[in-house]
Length: 488
Image 1 (spheres, rainbow, N blue to C red):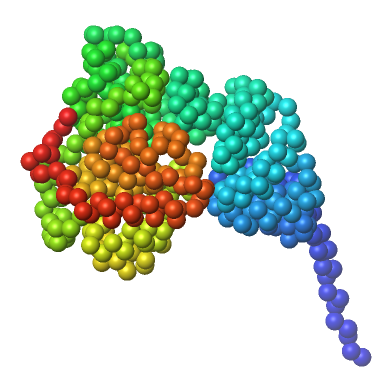
Image 2: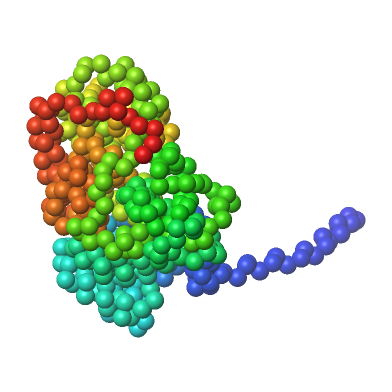
């Protein structure tokens, strides 16, 4: 008789499957991750929700908004359109669509969603009004842009964005005094927070302080710093000791300025001072009007040492004696208007086809996506690897005949040096170029080539190519090395 084996011990019951996270809770986590700049995490959570709950509008809208912020515009638009098709009264989704369509110059669609965002927005919010105003501005309907900026201020009087938008619009129209008042709100924009440490001295109001010490802070981009540096002699005329706070990239241009007694590049090194002023506030303090812009140009010079070095270098790589032209076609990627002002190098093919012109890249960095096209032109000389600061850029400009640039700091630098410069201007243009002018009130040697239609560069590039052809017949105006100066 066989003996049966013992029965196996009872197995513990399998744990129940984990409870699925409610989709709304997951989307809250995604939103928190997005706010903390953990973009990949936020995108992953949204996609997980859509896998479990296909077509869920909250996930579609949030994912679309996040993808729009990281530049995946077409995918973002598709997702947001799906979201508003299900829930048409969510103002934030409409707002995102307005912004994204405007970035693609699809202005009718941008305006439709923007006006819907205004309709859906809660009272006391200005964001939708600002987006509609910006859309009308791109469409050239400036009166309506003013209307919506003002309505935005009425909805949210302490919001900086509608004030700033109105200020730039007024400045572009030459309404400088009200424009400067509104432009002062730039320092309260979200992106400006944390840019300055807590200041313990009083802000300067323009008063005379013959025995005082003033700290002048370059508070905006490099182009703005170069543009507004023209006011330094006016500050020095009222205050005994001028201290300048600069970035390392630009300090060499002004460290020997006769109106500057000290300078620093790190906040921890800031000397003692009695008052401070933002460089970009000086036009308002001095009550600048269109016809009172300080125009003592040039007020920037390359150092003699660097100018001589680059004169020798360019003589080696540009031996033909032909027209020398500096070229800049792309600005800083983080600039809020970079998509409108920058272009791909192939857009400038009509210029590069002037084979009897030597082009020198003043572009830093050289965009990787443009290198294959650049290789087709032996008359395009890339020296970007040796551009260590604006001091090098200025030294090259001293040794060439002409600068061609989009609206970047290099255009300001060339203008401040009094060098002949052609600038490609988008539509709508930055406020400082005013409306419809081919000249600049800030820089007498600049010539502006403007878009007629947003995003379309063919016409201004063709006009510039024609101007370049005429320029070839004129003699060189490059500075002799002995004319370069070490300081102001």
